[in-house]
Length: 387
Image 1 (cartoon, rainbow, N blue to C red):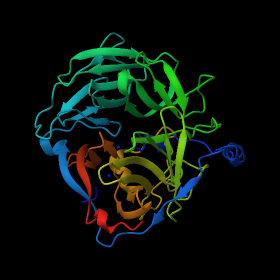
Image 2 (cartoon, rainbow, N blue to C red):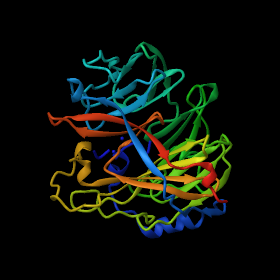
Image 3 (cartoon, rainbow, N blue to C red):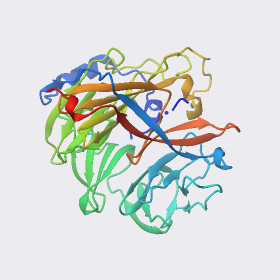
Image 4 (cartoon, rainbow, N blue to C red):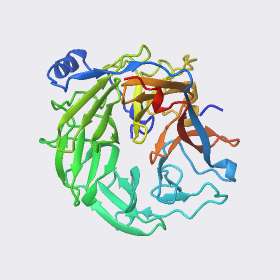
């Protein structure tokens, strides 16, 4: 079985459309005064193994197919998978248990009124319920786990070019990774929104970085650390930073494996004729064991050109991604700052609620099927650490 959906999908790589001038990038990088970086070493544990345990199957194996390649996923407080699929169920949300054998009644309907949706472009969960971001209206709509409409928040700072990772904060505030082009906020990757969804603070870069073209170099993967500050990972280089919510840059960790060269240009986004560049897609800290989990998307180890795309609007189906992508997972011991385990898989697409690593595999009828895995590191104990 080849296991593989902020940053939480190949949508990020699909946004890379044009070559960015190297000189412009180098000039911007040279102005950054980052916290002094620390090096992550590789010292693989001989007894360690990254294990993905099969946990949830949703789709044709249950008698129905609900998923397109553009679906968003989350995990609610009951452990149910929450799906927003703009293609199969436009402007609706599904709550799915692993025991589902019938199509559940979707919630939501098309429109601009309360509880209505026009263009779903994001989904996440919190103790409030299920949050759906509507790129068509610039609103965030909240439903409870029974599917009842609770509230709507209007984003009060103009259009968002891209809404990436989100972390709910206290006081009904929200941390987002987004491209916001207002004068005071452009070029910063992280934004704290207050309870009314106004921008409270923008930060996450020592120097605001807004480059020409359509590659969004402000995309980040986010996670809480054990000391209650933020892990912030760039997608185009193996570089992990720590930031406080006050906007203080307190730590930088870097690593230079031979399979991940930092990149600031890309010649084509047609993965049928050229391999995709590596991308850091997800970060998570096991706070009890002080282990940092990282997920990377890489060109398939057996990559070869398939055909030349003739339609500039053509998109790659997630089920077909195994022709183009592999996934590398690494585990870093934060006490010793060493990579203690790594494993290469087929195309895994992301993480739902920091609980399930998931893939979308092809069912017998050709449709996409959600398969979720819990993840663990076997064979590693704290007694093995050598500082």
